[in-house]
Image 1 (spheres, one colour):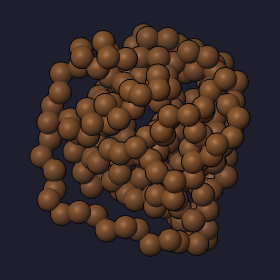
Image 2 (cartoon, helix red, strand yellow; image 1 turned 120 degrees about the vertical axis):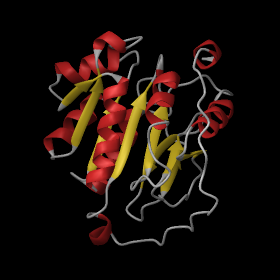
Image 3 (cartoon, one colour; image 1 turned 180 degrees about the vertical axis):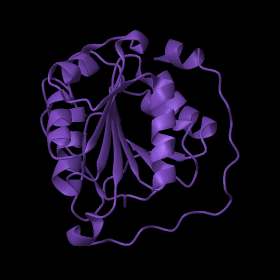
Image 4 (cartoon, rainbow, N blue to C red; image 1 turned 90 degrees about the vertical axis):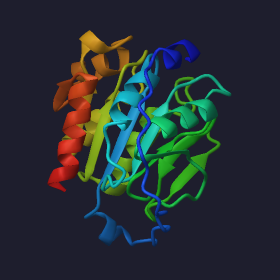
Length: 220
């Protein structure tokens, strides 16, 4: 992880000085009209996340929730690294955080991260899923349950199958689903399984994913 982070050139972006007020809790009926971006990744993920997150504007219109499989103890450094190289705000998620547009929430070590009907983050001390905690699948399942089709879900480079079946569920309910292409993946495990399951509407390079997400924000 340290080697991967050290090889990425940082581009520091100027932030807006105004702080965003905490969002007001909304009913399920209201937030069905809102949208969320959910991302899952593992091996080789940090530099790809940096490329994508650095393309998002500070006023990105949706909250972003991310599960990155990473060795315990490295998350804080990765959050600081991403936060200083991106215009959008990056933070480690805390239990009960309100899901605020223009904020990226990374799952902390050794807990599952899910979203709730009240548009908040919940951190669960539940058993690992196939040895993984946090698990991408848990996050994707929760955004499917809460936001239904109003989701853009992205599965990036990583070993194994985590998140692929849930990405298929999201596609089947009408969400936008994207996976990283084989040529740019360090490991094509998670995206490859999603492709095998026909879970991906789009198969793209990191640069193409970044451009796609920015274009979605403009259309919003």
